[in-house]
Image (cartoon, rainbow, N blue to C red):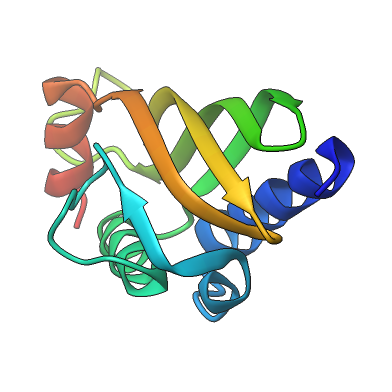
Length: 141
């Protein structure tokens, strides 16, 4: 596939699955043997089900989650992206004085290998939510 086709596949996956929660798109864009080498559930579940499970878990924990692609490069076999995940939540009792909401933010990079129009494998490095942001989020639920 061309670099532009691979870019479109990955952009569609991020927008549909992670930002909108359309988990069925995983079946379209991830190979049946897809491997997530170092994501949320590495090596426990393969294929599109691994993506669906990860996205469902994050979206349940952080309703309103959106993922923004900050930078993306692609070639005929790979796509690399830098992204930011955001979710605004009620601040709860652990918030700074006067704050009514807290934006939880995480950032990371993902490298994808593609073949035949589907993501075959990926490697993700990310900055987990800080303990303080996570406490604010959990206190608001």
